[in-house]
Length: 368
Image 1 (cartoon, rainbow, N blue to C red):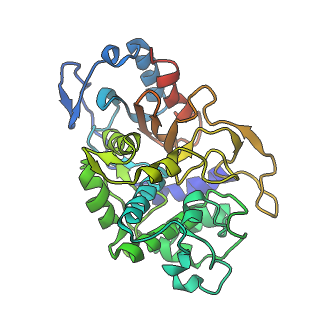
Image 2: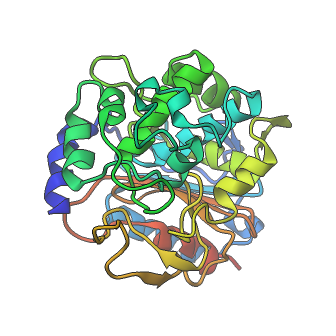
């Protein structure tokens, strides 16, 4: 059922520009799209194993794969699409939205403990009055969720933020975890009210510009009145590596602090809720404990019918974290080794996608 609903939404979600052929990266190039380069051997990788991982990524409909270590581009591969052509990365957008909240937090425009009703007056005096900004980031807001509302109705809404704000409260805040696209879309209203700037403009000015993400943009709903904050970012592998690098550097870019170190740690350094050990603030973390997936079956209280205790990548370091999107979009950071792995590719209805565990092999198998 989930596959059918998601497939029905793809015609609206997908906005990938036309692909074009690109030449293979030359090992002799000193800079690629602004990145200082190095060789796999100098970076401590086994080149043959990296090539095997890249071949697997290509076979699984990837359009690009990039590996960065210690601020240098070790290798990148591009298949059928120019390196600088932006493409849809689905829920990787959520992690970008988390960063925008962090910037507004650093500016003093909002606080994690703020009731969302401060920015959404229609929630005042309702069951949603006690939902906080932190709840939206942790996906434990208790806002209404169903496969149909989250993957079809929200996607098809002319104004996605208005639709998301208008849904009701399903569970008490903090009592149930759900991968709730609509709840995350409410952050568009929060950010716009808190900063006074449309979210996509805020992202361009305060995040993409300072990071040099020149091939990246957030998209808007059909009406143009709201920014898509749960999906919709269009970017490239090397731009996403710049975004991941911001978190690897604990919130700094080029010596300038963009995010508070404490916010980066809260977002990616630990679980944000006991209801899902694998989730931070709109980032996936590699912590052990009760794990929840995007569409797990739940009981009437919103709790998983078949709880799974484990770790997203059992053979990787627990400090590993990642932005993840539908169809195997990955922007992974292994803090211990200082490695970033980014993959973008097509969404597949059949066959295995290249996912987080595949990306993690770069550090668990290809690193010397």
